[in-house]
Each structure stands twice: as C-alpha cells, then as structure tokens.
Length: 279
Image 1 (cartoon, rainbow, N blue to C red):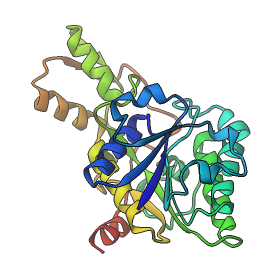
Image 2 (image 1 turned 180 degrees about the horizontal axis):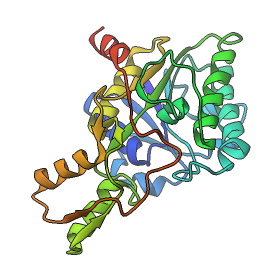
Image 3 (image 1 turned 135 degrees about the vertical axis):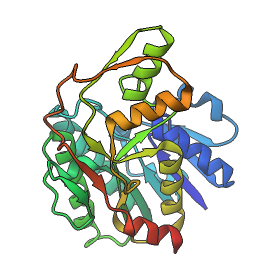
Image 4 (image 1 turned 135 degrees about the horizontal axis):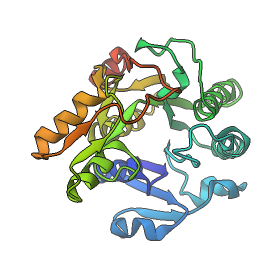
C-alpha cells in the first residue's frame, strides 16, 4: 500500500509520518519545502509540491497512491480571517477534486470541531453544523463539496473531525509551548484565562495513530470525531502538566478573557470512533 500525506511537515503531519514508518508503509510525503523534512530523507519519498499548482498529471506525479491522507491547510491560527473561504477553500477543493478525477480511490481529510460552532455539551457526528468563524465555515463547506463529489465520482471518503491536540512540536503560540517557555525563563507566574472552560484534549500520538488506522482501512467511513470523549477544564489540564513535569510556577487565572468564538463547555462523543477502532 502507498499512502500520500499532505501537510507532512506540520505539527500533526510529522507525527503521522512517524506512525506510518513504524508500520512499514510506503509513504509519499508532500511539502512545499523539502528541507523541512530532512530528518525523513531516505525513509520516505518526499515530493515538493504546492497544492495551488495541481495539473492533469499530478496524481501520477505523486506516485498514484492508494490513499491520500490530507492534512494541509494554510492560514492558521487566524481562525477569523476571510482567507479561509476566499482563497484556501477553492484551492483545497480544486486539488482534491483533481486527485479523485485522476484516479484516487480513497481519501481521508481532517476537519475541525469548529464546524460545530457555539453548540455546548457532548457533540455527536449527526449534530447539525453551525460554524461561528471563517475557518470552521470553510472546512464545513469543503466537507459538503466532497460529499457532493461522491455522487459523481466513486471513492471512499473519511472526514476526521479533530478536537484539541497537544504534544511535541505544536505551534509556539499554543498553550503548552507557552507554559514551557515561561517555566524555562523562570517567570514567576503564567498568565491565562480563568481556565474553567471544558474542552476535549487528545495527545498527538493518539491523533496520529487514529488517522493512520482510518487511512489503512480504505473504507467509506464518512464523518467521524477524533476526540477523547472526556471533557476536561483548561485549568485542570495545565495543572496536570505542572505535576507531570514538576514545574513550579503560579497560575495567574483570569488574566485573559474567555474566547468569544468557542462555547464554554463542549467535547466530542466517540462511540463511532471506538467502533471503527475495534472493527
């Protein structure tokens, strides 16, 4: 089996690459800058490619993979930027449409919990989407476009809706890297929100493993939540990190206001994910 991976040099992509290599799978790692994947040279096929430059022979150029695991998405973390649907959405759909039209038989694409919008509580895959920011809107539209495309083209499709991911290599603007940096600098206190909001957090190792399992199945799974299924407060997670790493720093709770584009309490429901993993 050959799996092509877009977004291979990103936070999630690097962990997915390692997971694929552990399973001895032929991988085509797609990136706009092959120097970003120097550590994987010789172990995977690296293809330098910009999704905006898709042509009529791109599928052949990528080695005619059995599965495309599509992680790439530009414009983050600016969730409110109109760029997501004015520029990124058409670029994304054109690339994926061409891959299917040229022979791709199985596609796994990562979505986002922001597609659910401001809904609270446990969120199941059959909830109606109500995105409240341009990023969530663009992702949700792409999912719908690909579902309509299935009416014209035969291919298996999985939409892996990600919740909150953390771990080694995540962007420096994320909570854990900021906390680590503050500790390393000897800062006396760490500024954060009140921390009472409930979220669904999943370590990056689990996320990478689940995505690879979904890709290997080559099934028409449709929409599926990639989540822990367990609500956890932001404050609780930070305090957990402090204990696990023996970090000594005071939390300055309430320094930042709560986000106005996320509900105070929401998490994923994972019965479907459990069934797929056990199947």
